[in-house]
Image (cartoon, rainbow, N blue to C red; front, side):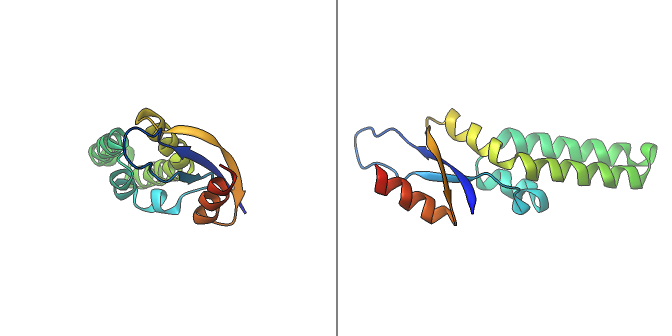
Amino acid sequence: MTLYSIFEKPAVKGPAESPLAVPERFSWFAALLPPLFALRHGLWLVLVVWVALLAILIVLAPIIGEDTAFWAYVLAALFIGLEAPAMRRDALESRGWEWRGDLIAAGEDLAQRDYLSTH
């Protein structure tokens, strides 16, 4: 079971969008492929910072050592994986989505279903 944060876009004229459920757990997708994760969720600032970090590590690798640069990359990737839910929540809130609560469910679709059944 996973804790999901439920976000809903306030309805303006037209059909309402379905709520989104953001899982509160480590994201392997974000840790293994940070640029694709950032693109998939529209996290442009995260993408720019990630590219800048890679450029800095490439430039500093001869100075600090390749092993150190590699482990710095691994630590940064783990940080992205751990902070992925927070990054998604912040991005949704900045785009006008409103947090509606937290639910415990076995999957994202079940969290959405449970939220819709109570509202």
